[in-house]
Length: 251
Image (cartoon, rainbow, N blue to C red):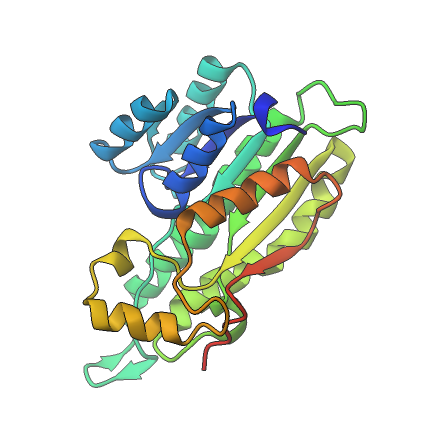
């Protein structure tokens, strides 16, 4: 697959890693439809990159089905799906205020894991109808994991569990979809300069960057976007999780 011929849907595309991915794809000639809850910023980003926007709740089946249908109407096909929608909560299993809130745990799993699967399965159903390329390729799905899936820190039980689920479903999904010519990959980013981190004090940002062995800085969302673009074009990548973290291992 070539990114110039790609028709992509990107969840969480109104900001952070999703926005960076959408911008990278569009810059290199891809058609892009953003799926995001943010009904204000989403349309602005879509207009800036010459793409499309659908306000979407990734945890809701009807909402995603409508978004996928809209993307099909606008682009004619879907050949790539990049899932970046997600949330993070910091809460210990038992803290000063008592046990971890069950609602917070369930919401994290629902958005990060169930939401990614919800979008992936519906996008895959459309990809399976695409005319195959000479090598049989019909599409690629890229989900966002995290290095927290492998070495989650205290207070990250919900987040690490949701991202561990992304890692765990990568290979079986790739095997499920192989007969249809659809690849499934995941990227596990380290600490990136997303809007959430950008709001932290400068000294905190510097301390986080200092923990990264090399290069000793926070990740640039544009690097995530380039990695997603590389996966689209590198057709032999399948069923794997790529860490993108500057060799960071959290303690």
